[in-house]
Every structure is written in C-alpha cells, then in structure tokens.
Image (cartoon, rainbow over all chains, first blue to last red; front, side, top):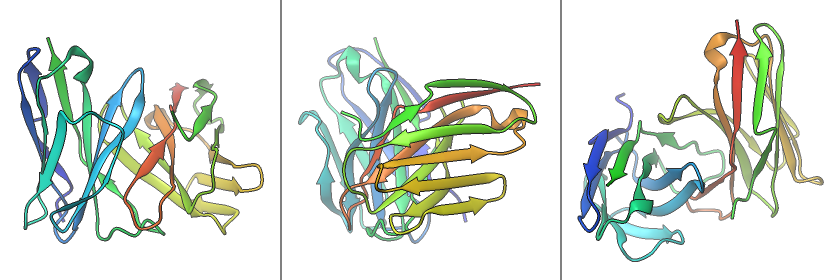
Length: 115
Length: 112
C-alpha cells in the first residue's frame, strides 16, 4: 500500500496570505489527524477528522481550519498567515478512531515558510 | 504544554553502544508510543506499549513502561549510524480520538 502523502512538500507564503495543504491517507484509513511541528512548541495536535466530521480540535485559533472528503482525503487551511505559522505540518492516518493498539501513520509533512 | 518530557534532550554515543532515552508524562494514559524522525521529515512509528504492559521488544528496541512513576524508557541496543534521529514519545489521553500528545524529543547522534 502507498503511504500517507502530503502536498505540497514545501511552500513559501507571505504574511496575510492563506494556504491550503492536502493529505491523502493510506487506502482504507478513515481517520486523519493534523499536527504542527515547530522548534519552540514541538509537535502539537491541530485536529482530527473521521467520516468527514471534525472529531477533535487542538488549541489553535480559528484561522486554522480543515475538512475531510468522502474519500477520506483531508485538507487544512490557514488564513491570514503570520510569521509564527512557519512550521512543518504533519498529517497522520489510521484505520479507526480507537487509539488502543492503533498505530498512526505519518506523512512526510509540508514545510511552510511565512515571510 | 507538553504531556511528555524526554530526557536527555540530546544524546551522543559511539556506534555499537546502547542508547537509552526516557519519557515522563503527567496524566493517565491508554497507551504510549515511540516515534523516530529523521531531519525534520515525517514520523516513523517504532513501538506501542499499552498501559497494562510493562515491557515490549521489537528487534533492537526495548520499551518499558512504569505507570506508577508515569515514565517510559526506550533502549536501542547495538546502535548504528542510521539510528541518528530524533525520538519522541507520544501518549494518547482520550480513548476513541486520534489525538497524540508528544514530548519535545531526544536528539540521538551515533558517531562512527
């Protein structure tokens, strides 16, 4: 099976712009989670989608949003970009929502740089 | 704030030696997972240990979990240059939700 894919891999934007990142989970996986990784804050949970519904959300402002499509592919959007949004954005997929013994598979990430 | 705290933050050893990393967490967990990350790339799942397990092995990896001390350790035996990476522990706090809380990680360097 193909792994989790994320596009684009690298992105450069300027403050005030918006950006959309895409994640394609492993075939058959229905749960997709997003994480932000920065040197200062480390890895932080953004949100989780399952069956096209947001099930869980981290402590991020409303500028961060996402959605999931019927084929389980997910997108996340960041509006009005700030310098602090520069980060590696990681997507993870799993078969179910149950974390008991359920591994999450991560994609390679999208490196976003905000100038 | 981070749920997990890894110790040490950085570790440098010679190839062939064993590497031990520790992780402490604050609240009750369902399970604890260890991940590896190479140079700002994606995370690779290494091993998952459930809260009712005390020790687990996978190849050269050995993970222990002490729920009374809220701590876990990852031992990599006979280290190789390819083991150079950052290692993170992650805990799940909410059953039925794909939400992992990561520590800050240990940066492991294996010197040839």
